[in-house]
Length: 413
Ligand SMILES: [Zn+2]
Image (cartoon, rainbow, N blue to C red):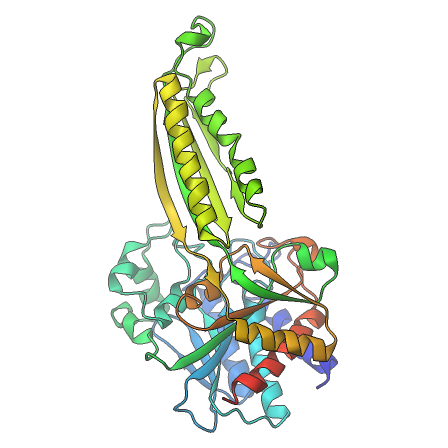
């Protein structure tokens, strides 16, 4: 297969998709259940049809293109990603994985490879959670993890619920559960995605084989003391919330570093209340985001934070609250699929590296229940979720070649 031809078609399709944004000239903004989402889905449907796939749009806003195998009753192999974006995001995150999956379907046919089981290209709705604050909506619905209550529960900044947004998009939210695929109908899932981090680009490696998607725990922590005059209150008569909070915060990076396995912990927001230069703070609010491929490490850091908060707030005679915002357990991706991909990298003489994904993906949702693997393509300078996001079309084509090699093998079963 000519990689130049693949590069050309991937470039053509991704360039065309750039127009479906609500912020032209300011990056890609393609939120779920909007005009831009509709335009992108219609274009994907056209590409799928032209590639000889049978197109299906489901009740959750996902779009599928099916290349029937010799025995369509077998569990299918699915490859895809998401078509939504963040605000002012890039032109590759998510959508590149769908375009490369369509190219893979073209390749299978042009190379005369008749899959034994069906091959399905998937374009998922609302992975980012940018509009309603949740995420993995479409892939979750495919697995039967979304229902009517869920659709009514989450609202966007204009107070429009998923339920209302779906209706104005032309979907019937009452039928959301019909988006679930029959138990056993999907055999394996593979996702091609840009790395969104700097490792591959910095080390000049062509292919990333993702062996884990990290788990995440997120907390909102409030430390309460007492506000007093900054000049008249002696140091040993204060209940300084900043003193207690910062003693805890300052230890968190080292606790993550100690794990020495890529575990990261971030305090991204700190807020003092009332927040005056001459006032001892009564309250400090801060967030903690802990990620690791090892769930025990995440739990351990969360426990250490809790104990340190107990100790330090007792010291000042204050109190604290540690509110859980998000808990996602890490997913180990499928070793068998990864080994075949590694084999294909060697055959094609592409450099590769095993690495974890520090960001969540549809594969995080799907990998909880199905054999799943991901392949990463280098992101220039690791930039993503911004206008500067850039991945070379030729690199996408190389990863697609690896995927085609993989698909040739795993659709034979
Ligand atoms: Zn993505």
